[in-house]
Length: 142
Image 1 (tube, rainbow, N blue to C red):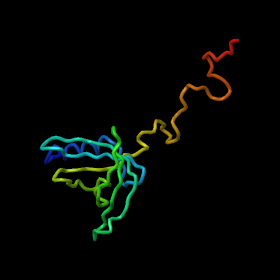
Image 2: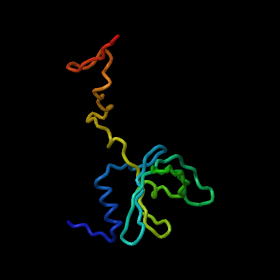
Image 3: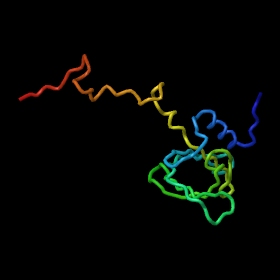
Image 4: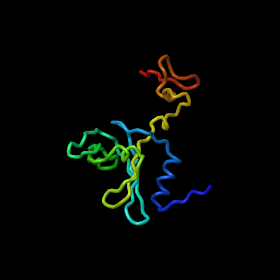
C-alpha cells in the first residue's frame, strides 16, 4: 500500500515518526522536537527542553502556557500557548499560518545498553583497584 502525502511537511512528519523514537506524552524536562514549515515547501527543525506548564486561565478549553528552552546558541527561553494534542504530537497545528509538529523524544532510545540499565563503564579512568590488565599504571618518579 502506497501512502499519499499532501504536502512536503506531511511527508517530513511521517518520516520523523518512523525514524525517531518518540513518546506519547510530554513532561517537564523532556526534550522535544519541533518541526515547522518555514515557507512553501521548506521545513526546519528545532529541539527544546520543556521547562514547565501553566494552565491558561483566559481560555475556556484546555490550553497551556508551555515554557521552553530552545537548545541552540544562544539558548532562548520562550512560551508557547498550546493545547495538549499540540505538544504531544497528536495534532499538526499552525502558528502564524505555518504548520508545526511537536513531540517529545524518548530518552530510552539514546541508552547504549540492551538491558535498559546504565551504559557500560568507559575503559578510563580505571576502576578502583588499579588499571585494567594489559595497561600500564602510573608510577611515582622522584
